[in-house]
Image (cartoon, rainbow, N blue to C red; front, top):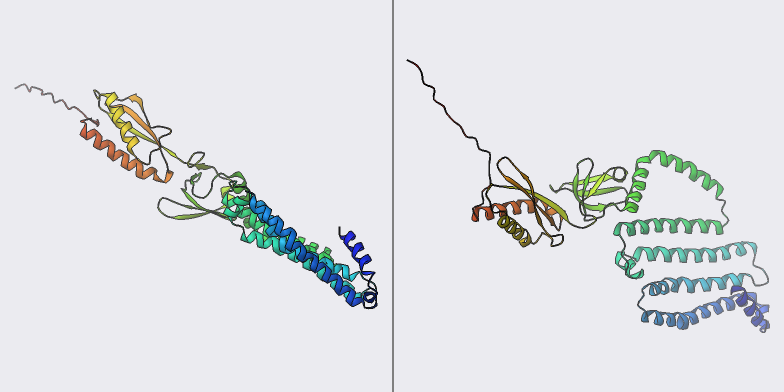
Length: 362
């Protein structure tokens, strides 16, 4: 496409002898032609594409047009500058080196800046719209966004150095030595970084879920970062745990795979209690609690016949694992109240003491 435009434009300008007499004027006309060509593309093609994109339900096409708009137009103008540099007579060696390299560097900077700007402006909600409403984990999105920005930044610098013909061998050698030194000095930081990537990829937990660690810590996940994970305990204490440890420990996620938690309440009643009535009362009590989920439904199970009690277990699920302690407290209070109102006895250990009198012979 570029060669076609180059050939056509050069042939067209042959019809203007005055331009051959003044090569600077010819170069200016070439750049002006590309600038006008870019404006025509902007006025007709891009606006037409934008109008079509607005009629579709996808957000990705709107994102693409907004992303390519300005970098594409600037690239067309810079291609015009490169074309102008090829006009005979050739530019002096210094200008022939600086002007094309500046133009190519400008193109690289424009596209690199467009990528960085788009990444910085795109939040989680916007990313989900671009992908057609698909669900994206916030932590994975943040990791991808940060890593992408680093890759784009270093790629932009790398290509600009190549354009200016900078010898990168010493730089790579120095970078290798520095990299080894940094790796040895910051091995714990790197371990946490790769541990964070492992945590993100495994998706063993996410923000808002309630977890228990093998070491005994338990609480709600409030932040998952590149270096560490923060959980808030029931005592409102914030614990920061390096991701290197999180990637190598057993984790019990009480909020997965379903966001609910099972509670088991051991209940003993005296022998002679109407068990059908007892079951109806306890299930009604559980179903009236707003924190108890309807599916799976609460259930009462007879476990054992004890020495002085018939032992049951009330099984139910609550919506939020953080409510485990509070709901256990409230349910036990309600059970005691219901037992009191219905004269249901809760047996307790008893001992019968028999005193035998022994006659003393006179």
